[in-house]
Image 1: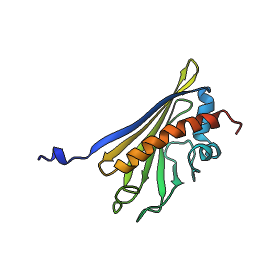
Image 2: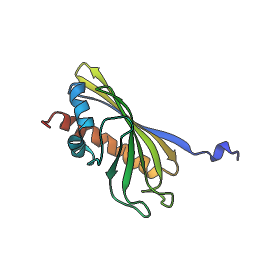
Image 3: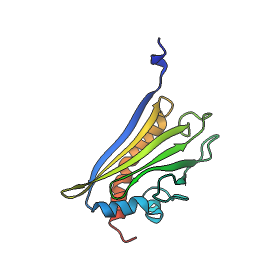
Length: 154
């Protein structure tokens, strides 16, 4: 066995869908704290400005308090939003293990609305296997909810 064999494998979750709304409507749902709370979780301190730090709160596990710490990395209005997504604790295995990833939303016009491409990158396997599996399923249900919220009045 070599050192290369001992390196963790990094995996990404990719969800790509066309939602029946203009990019501006999807962007509003991605960047309004009030709307974000309706399709994923309520953010604390979010603003669509590079460098902004914000948090989400979810179910704690073991040594982890359930806080997801994020920082806005890139903002191109109506086109791209990227933020870090960090949580967990080194002492946890499975749910709540340390996670250091990036969520990137890319929007592009499509014939019937907007192509929304979500890439949640940087899952280290096997350590993040539980998060990779659960969030892989979760993002597939969240994108349609994003579309539902984008079509509603704010």
